[in-house]
Length: 98
Image (cartoon, rainbow, N blue to C red; front, top):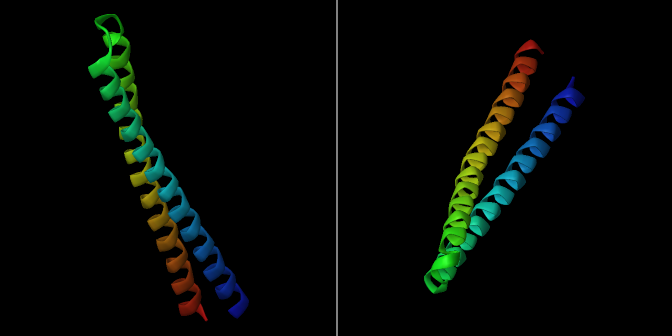
């Protein structure tokens, strides 16, 4: 029975690490989108009136991507917490059974 508990602990550690990497990657994507939005704003400031609509469109796209990355990062954290909780509950159930 000890091997099952150790296997569960290993799986829990791997799931937590994966959730952390996902959260980091999504944070990086959000920061990149924010940087792109700032660059688009700077371009809009120097753009001719003809191109202003295109730049405004790109600003909307980068804002949407930044918002999406933020929400996805939150969801990734929630998934990680759910996995941790599920494995801990399973560990506790096995511990009480034994």
